[in-house]
Image (cartoon, rainbow, N blue to C red; front, top):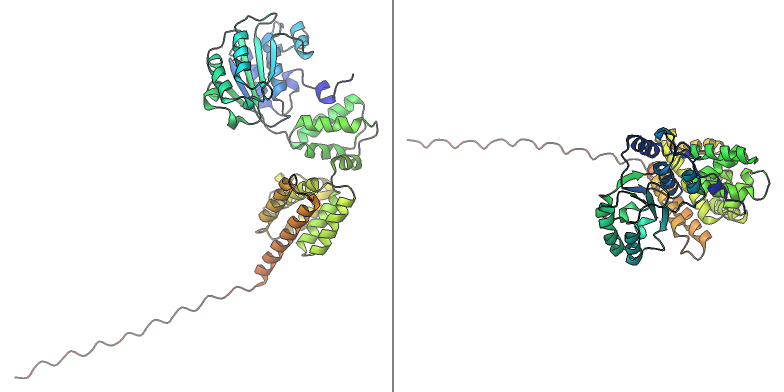
Amino acid sequence: MPLALYRKWRPRRFEEVVGQEHVTRTLRNALRLGRIAHAYLFAGPRGTGKTTTARLLAKAVNCLAEAVEERPCDRCRICQAVHEGRLIDLIEIDAASNRGIDEIRDLRERVRFSPSEARYKVYVIDEAHMLTTEAFNALLKTLEEPPPHVIFVLATTEPHRIPATILSRCQRFDFRRLTTAEIVRRLEEIVAAEGLSAEPEALAWIGRQAAGSLRDAVTLLDQLAADEEPITVERVQRTLGAGRWDLVGEIVEALSEGETARGLTLLARAVEEGAHPPQLARQLVEHLRAVMWLQWGDASGADLLPEQRAAAQRHARALPPEVLPRLIRLFMTAAADFRSAWSPQLALELAFVEAALACQQARAARSVPPVPPAPAPAPAAATPAPPSPAPPGP
């Protein structure tokens, strides 16, 4: 059975990890200086390389290469065993399904035993924030004073749920979301290596949809590659349930020009063409965010496709800056409320109507001439002092 692309192209050396140089550089320096810690916390969004880096760390500390700088070499039997998932001394625990105190007590019993074939036993606890309070308390002593042959790596997407007593005993590394450019570059490498055909604009669509998660991007690429057809923008849009960007631009155009009926008609047309209302709301938020960046004179934050840029610049001149944050919040709220809405399209239409009313109010406020300030009252005239009484006669 063929491997999924995200598993097939999982990094096998630190140099292959995308977008987390601040993490891999520190780990490699610690390895070179012999200053490996006994416990690490890898925190960050999903799909950014936390579990992959934990496996690379397990490779590196157990690699048989003589030169420390070459570890992990990805050639020795230990590196190969880690890559193939058969190293007994690399124990991966899913805390979402092994979250109770009994599982942690069992772990505490097993850490006392020496490694079977490697230098270190490496315990990777994924989704560590799912452990119960009792389980964290049971782990605390072991995490504070583990046996010298044990390394713990806790991976989590929600570090705020990890108790402070655990955090203080770990070296913490924060993994960041990848930029669209970094994701697209990696997708281009995979496309070339797999012999696939993909339009550059289609890869840009995938990279933006991934929202910083390389794994999500590669998974979507895998899904599109299964049809053995060229990966085009149209196919990506159809798979995502996205609306055409020109239609999104026309919807914002109707909003900026106060044409509410036309905007509702365009929303209905986009849904009829296959756009999912939640995805369409996210596209509107993305476009309005770019408009906001352009209005404030900094285009660096406006992550725009070529077909969006001209429309966004037009909208930046037409939409009132004071109302734009409210428009973005309206569509963000609509995108978040779709799960509970019995009619997703209606939720999007209500958000559009509220946004149109907000624009109308802003334009009306601008058209009212400012009220001139009332003239200052004239200073009161000074009243003459009464004459002093005449002195009495003799």
